[in-house]
Amino acid sequence: MRTLLAPAALMLEGGGFWASVARAWRLTRGSFWRLLGIYLLVNVLVSFVVAAITSPAAVVATLVTGDPTATSFWSIVITSIADVIGLTLSTTFMSAVVGLLYIDVRMRREGLDISLARAAGEHAA
Image (cartoon, rainbow, N blue to C red):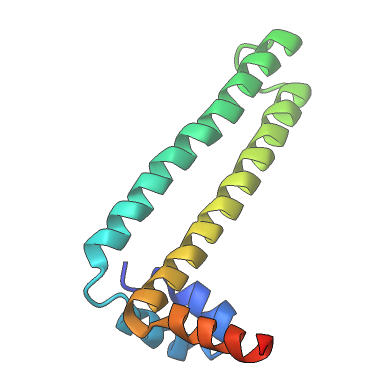
């Protein structure tokens, strides 16, 4: 959990790898259980969504191909397409959640929201 925010720090701050890991380590100090709870909850929800996408595809593949072992070419194609769709959605959603957790931790720890409001006020005036 202490390095959960390292990819977000790497992408959003543009530092080096080890600097991003150290930054994530400092940012998550004191927020371990909250971040763990949110991450586990989102993982469970994403697992249900992926299962809701891939399970019907497996049933359809079995019914269409008549192959109960799901080893025929078309059965594999149908289930693979469903897997790709499910994994694409889940990976995108999970990375968005990690990005939002990173922004949330920065707002709580460093007052990022106040800095952004000041910067927006200077540009508006």
